[in-house]
Image (cartoon, rainbow, N blue to C red; front, side):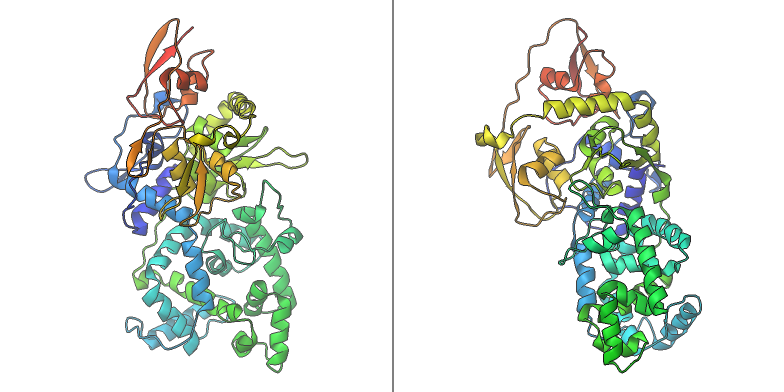
Length: 517
């Protein structure tokens, strides 16, 4: 089971169109991310991301999966899904919607069944019918994406909610709050899957520092949300009101109760709540209904080959970046960011009194643990090497001003210019992976790139190589680091210098000159 296989399942079933961009992803990362499809359209088990290339079979890449990967990665680092959720909640009008595919009598019967098996008040009313039909008519594409993403998150949510005796249906709250985006950030600063404000997150044990924001940690934030919701239920004695208080604060709910004349049913006080909260519970119930009756409405539910709890963690012993982990394990940087969203700068720090962990696909954990000392030595050497003045202070003529386009994300841009994601973030003072269309980025390329309408190539000089020189043919699964480990005294930088390589991307079949002396 691999993380990459799960990503491919998502890609093949989300139904997103082809990317319009012409930038290519490196062959190395493609092999790590793409599943292969045989002539009968069955998914074939993908190759393993590992430093040991001898156990990896040579497999042919799949162009369709590559294009779909590009769109999926774009989706991972885009806030569009989160934005549509926010607009749908704040913009509800509760007007009648013509949707003959769902007769009112059928809806009433299903809501009655749903009401019987949940502690929430799911009784029929025209306002709820309006929201459900509006979502089914106008938001089908977004809902299918959320249903597919939920296959990854919901099992973990249910485990944490059950541990705290919270109704399992609370899992649907994360859809309304964040559209299942771990790094989602609202206009007022609420962050993460469960949209904690800074002070509330601190109150429930979520650490926020320059390096780490545990509001974006799926497990820790879910545990904090369960504790907070449990306290709100203890106060109000009603789950509908507890959810309203979670969104707008207990004070706004008690004021709405007073202004309504003492009513305590959510639907009777809704008109006295803030506009966003007035649409909050209807949106929650509408999503609950659609997810519970997804099959009846033509949505597809997919069981992923890997779930969140089929990944594993290793405690980090020395500072390391996700870029470095990607380079030594061959795991795509986007996969590592997806599994470790709480590290704001993609750096896992070492801080006294804190135990920070790195989450990896289960088939990568063994490789990491078996090579820990070498990996940390590599990371230290990289940090030592990078303790230099930033290039903008001495190399300004080589910089590129890049304008962010639709479909761009940091990993894609970094591969284009042969630099690291962390470099781009450092050069531009970025504290998250979020980009805006039209945003300008300063980049110091380390590989040939296209500038304007003509091709402007930056030549990379090779350094003289002496001694007993051999030719090494790159295999599937190889990385510069794994190759360097096969030749004592040879470093990653040596291989780059001898072969005029920028970045860390390799292609199977590429021939490298190596000096064994």
